[in-house]
Length: 384
Image (spheres, rainbow, N blue to C red):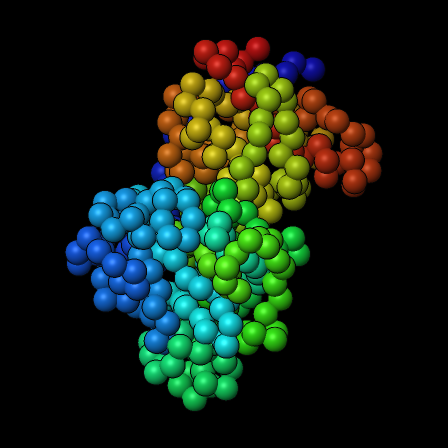
């Protein structure tokens, strides 16, 4: 039986129905009305941001002449900005229930029942006595404006909240102790619909705030955090990939939070979360986790290329399986191309059913044989 293998460059028409974007206006506080010259200037100075209570949140600026609010060294510690030239600073815990928060405006209200990834960076200020185990945020409608510097209690919030408001906590069992590096805090939420503000801080009173002493030399009983780059990104995106001269349409729903992947050059990988149904080129949701990790690697390593190989079970004719394996490889390649990877860096090959990794005599084996593999290489040496 003669096997024919085809190496192709992918050409697909791709429509992206919803492009990922950060819905937070002025997410790293770069847009201000003036260069800050004193502490407590966040509320009046940062465009699209405010404070939801009478707490005096700070804005730090690399261009500030007042050393108390300068970057990297300031009155509460030493830290460079994670993004841009500014960051905010809040007392997430201070005695007598004193609390500081930041409140940001969204570009548009959240859509009901859609998934969003909410994230921001924090760094514990070096002069803090305590580190907290929990940092929270509120998604709110309407804007909050309480005439008190106390913590925002559920009771006080319930009087002004609409049905679309909600509170979310992100607990760290090891506490948010890092004062050297920025820590990413993130959570995926399902929107109630209509939320158009985010408030970040500590919504517990003193007795319910879980804290750990990390600085015995601190002169005040507080926990102060720097904050940078607040983001709310829609995760329900639908990507439609259309092969030329074909009725096959692959729809990929993306709703996962992706971490970076470390890949070894010249090593063949199986996309672990991609198992096709028989006679199908449809991709399941978990596939996107793998593809986004590959995407991050390729974007950070511009001199690399990727070979994507498609495989089938032995159900159907050799000719049909050859075509199906091509389609499977190209579906993956089309996704990467749509996300910004040049077609010159992507090659695909279909092996049909010629390279099984399990017996085709069982359903379990056939399921494993319906797969896609990939290899990352350099110097245009992707095909052997």
